Length: 289
Image 1 (spheres, rainbow, N blue to C red):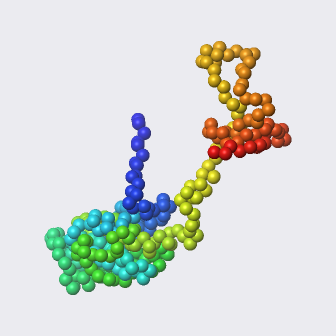
Image 2 (image 1 turned 135 degrees about the vertical axis):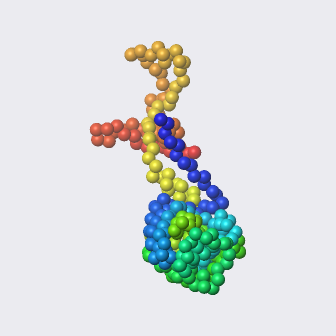
Image 3 (image 1 turned 45 degrees about the vertical axis):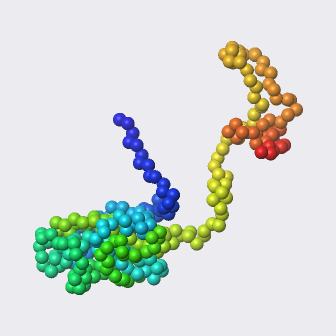
């Protein structure tokens, strides 16, 4: 049976900010915890069995995030003291209205329209958002030390300017099942509010140029070094007829040191010597290339 091909992720040079694997894993675990906590809180609030499942965590620019949302959707924006960009909890308006219906004793079987929330509905949803923010702080722990304070409720993803267009956002996507209603939801947090806490060595940033960093990395790659004579050119017939006792006349002068090569490239010359019980090469000159 042929081996399953490994998925290839295309690198986007227009969006160079990515999550290191260990950082992505930390965030995935945190948002998994948030999903479980939020599902439990929703069950208690709307009095119907609810489940929230975390599906994906990625870094997107705010423009990319907003473009992926429906034009008409519920977006609750929160201020963060450490950055001018805002955090977002997004969900379909119809789904939110069905939650409110359950809280008011409804069955939830009637399809809710996509419309703005009334003051009473906003107040009830505010209770759900308070629980969501509390669960978010609990799940992210020290990663989200700054408090989230409610800023506003928006209904159009194209007009809700939570951040500058190019600001990177940590975006987590969820599937929410509340009673018989299933809906997608997202949580977007400015990367500037999370990434410094993700990297414990963030304060030790390097001022080295990319070329210097590459050179530093290459300096730790193991390579094979060989001591070689100058090669000679012979006909295939001579190679095929080689026998014990044959003499090959080499083009390497007796007084000339051996070549020090790496992957066929001559880097230096070395005289044959000894180091204890082993042969060694003593560098006598360096190739200037």
